[in-house]
Length: 237
Figure 1 (tube, rainbow, N blue to C red):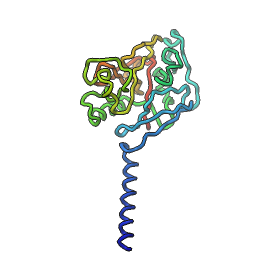
Figure 2: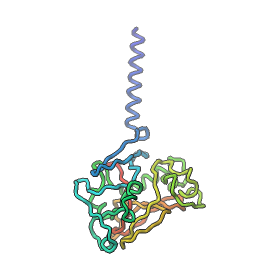
Figure 3: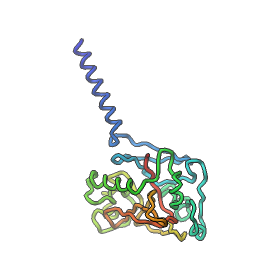
Figure 4: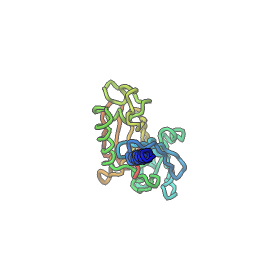
């Protein structure tokens, strides 16, 4: 009887330790969701030590309840030096799939993301890239590992998102090719890449982005005009 009680005690300790380790290890956490102030629900995913939204942001209010101006007019958008958002091609039908587009002035308020989340810095995008490169068995095909297995235009370059769609998305990040809005207010209607803001400015007129194209195996980063309208992916604080 004493031996049985001792074995039961050991089993309980081991079970508790295993559960605790699973909770503390981000690799073993189950997917969760997060809800923005508009009630939009986003799936999320743990990649390394980071937790990311698996969808582009589509909120129309800051997290304090203040409405973000929806600027549809081309000329009006081109002169903005304050926050704004728009729907891709000013078409609300694009929102569920591609999210909304925001200028960097909206990013710079620090109030776009739901509480407990934020727009990633340039360094946080780099951390994601480096983790994917080191741990997901994709050689140098970081872009392919982040890209969704649908919609990418064909590319003959091995390791690029458009080369072999069946090899895409080993990370679960599920990036879809999405057009964006140029600072002059017109839409760049391309289906060969995607571009997201970071919260890090590169100079007085530009801020850093993360870019994926259908033809390149790696991801890029450029300083883009703050008046442009780009997609947003949020990361957990």
